[in-house]
Length: 328
Picture: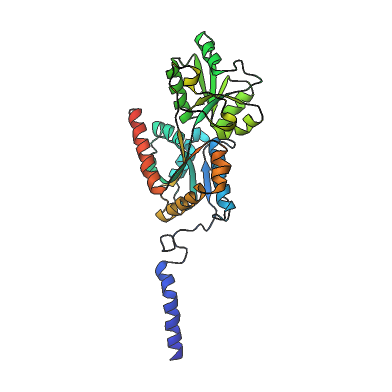
């Protein structure tokens, strides 16, 4: 009789575990918790804005104990990043352990040139908004101000700007349209990353470099790059404050800007529990001192956090608006 009672008691105690499918089971009342390494894809090379953003997030999460181990960053830059984005979109086996740094500059070429859409991913968060500037290499630049570069372009000298893909290309188009210049007067060279664009500027191979503050910051501090145009409706602060806006250079022009949102997505097959876990993690990071002072303030970004539900709606609308703009 005692043995029967003991057996019944053991079964009763274990039943909740069987009912939940195990303590760590996805979909359980305790939700998703990472139990193995997280792979985080970055479709730009090390040293660029997306890389700095990814590592800043990872560092803040680990420093505060919200992740016990930093994600493994996989730099997948082939095909201007489309290979990496497609690989994430089709990840199934480790969908809950796969993240992708994703921004508006990634979305633009993706929807224009491939069949991938936001529906092929699981939006997790939007973290920040970024803007660009134009820089010169003070040792090798032929023109010390943007006004000088524009004047040279109008008199027959081709000016060359180096930048990255996506949003940089879009912004370049907006800039020369506002200036009334043609592409053969002020040309643009597309690089796989901002880091590559900066390298070409430092080597004296181009006249101007388009970059966001994060990627250019260390070079500005070292005096290797000087900001000469803020592609924004207002000046930046700190060591970027000397760069005037386009309207300040010449009142005939309107300021040109294309704010870039920076976010995170996962594969389409990521579970809702995992998406919520990473979204909650992103919110904690967005409120941390490391993120706000060590990343946003340092690199002149604006906080614009959206959770996984808000990010999904925002990204889908952004995609629909852009598809309409390009006639697709």
